[in-house]
Length: 113
Image 1: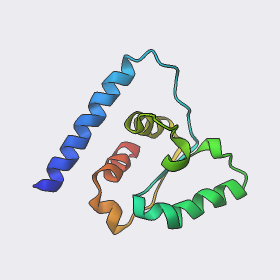
Image 2 (image 1 turned 60 degrees about the vertical axis):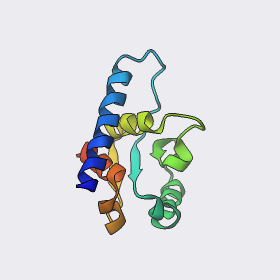
Image 3 (image 1 turned 30 degrees about the horizontal axis):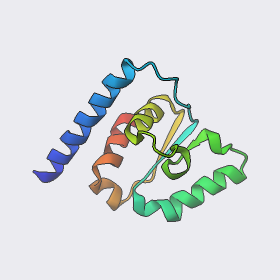
């Protein structure tokens, strides 16, 4: 099954990255209060609006993880995602049909659980 193979491959990458993080001497990554988990299609609409609304309500941009805003240029996105999922206080999942068909967002959902 193609979908199953994609999920297994993504999980292998995540496990490899988690192992690297355990032995890393790099400075700790930033910790976020909330992680906005979504698919790319949701970023410009609902999730982008939610991010701006959270800022309007007084949350600092440094406390909200949204990949386009939060990931430093050239950074390892998998490493940041693993760290953010493990350390965020709240994971907000925007559950849609697209989300249920995408392997990375489903892995985020599984890891947030």
